[in-house]
Length: 271
Image 1 (cartoon, rainbow, N blue to C red):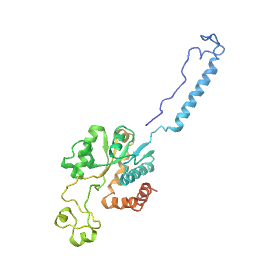
Image 2: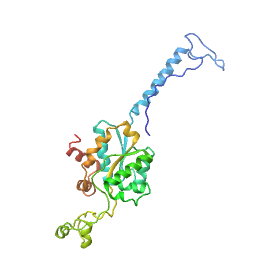
Image 3: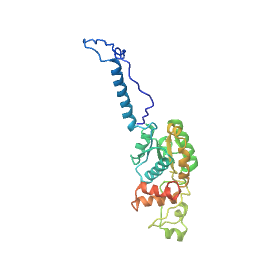
């Protein structure tokens, strides 16, 4: 929950308690009320204590809640964004790996989180329009998804990566090189099994699932610099780069955050 304590609280004026010195009034039970100035000082002290207590745990500027899905790629990208924002002086809260797509999506729409990395092709499911051919093209899918999400939910899509997380078919790399297998059409003329070589979907059978940070408009208005901070990161991520980074987490066992820190330092974006 985002809280800001911007109002100044003052003591409430209570009839008979703020009277001049020496002036006493009897309460309904017949007892004498305390001296006015003394009680006024006590109330002021209590109000000051309350303000100090509230301010101790709640900064005036609420932090940006950065989240992610459960996958290593989603969490790793979330960590990269969180670290970049922190490096630029924007306070953040780490809420990565909170759940699958429906959970994270609902958390964003309800305001429980502020930003996470989605995939362009999923907008076809969000808006019950999975059959639109636009989802099979990165630029068209991005334009359509960003327009629909902003109109319906005031969610802003930032710069997407030049990669797709779609399903792919693979053959052994030596076989691919020997028989010049690079596309699905090539594979349609020849098939083999074994090791791994990702083939290009030249027939565009799969939607494009390009990673794209999406953020609530109210947060972007509060921190408009976020768009510029995230842009060079996303533009640096192509398929090969993401494959290498994912392998470090999924195969080598490195943590999401460790890989994120190393990548940002290698690019000169983090000291």
